[in-house]
Image (cartoon, rainbow, N blue to C red; front, side, top):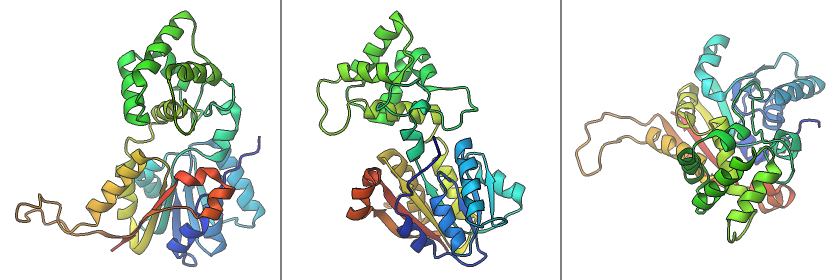
Length: 305
């Protein structure tokens, strides 16, 4: 399957970045390259990262076809390694950056990747297929206590106990190797679910665990903001409350002139490093009608002082 990804809130992001000709921009979640391509079309130069080798290969071919040779550097790495990546490239400051978090359309829609309960495929869920840990390993080898923790923390799943109990029972008979079998176990464990598939929260939780999506997210946002030139902006698109909470927390802290207990006199000496430009921006009705995945998206924008 050809790699593709529908970029969410493309116009809003590009508008907020206010791309400068020959400015340097960082896209930490390359995906199908939609945001990155628009940055370069407006004269910006690009550094982009992605863990998925398919994304790197596809974007490279797309950018060459669009005549962008010499305007971009693609790195197959985690955006959480932003500081090391930038140091190796000798880049001190960026004029803007974007993080479009979560799973790409391609990863969801390619059944062989094992991200979705819509297809019966081998349990995988790795964004980076070079790594060893897969969803199959999590489901079949994690102890019950860890599975419970993951479903509660990463999936906010109220039926976690039922689901884990049935996973333990079923894997004792035979390994749970496919998305279809796991989805059936979850569906049989959930007495009801208003809105969405019964397996949605559990699949999200396992995916987050496999790809270690939340650990270090806040630190990465802080690192990127501190490496922006004055007036440079970071746009972050999140798709669930756990991502959004981590991003919001860092932005609020960095935008505050004091982080002391408000009931006490200020002794921290903290000064605002950024100002918050946009919070919780949602996709337009027109976009959600075209791309249903944009319904859960939330955009936050911060500017370096």
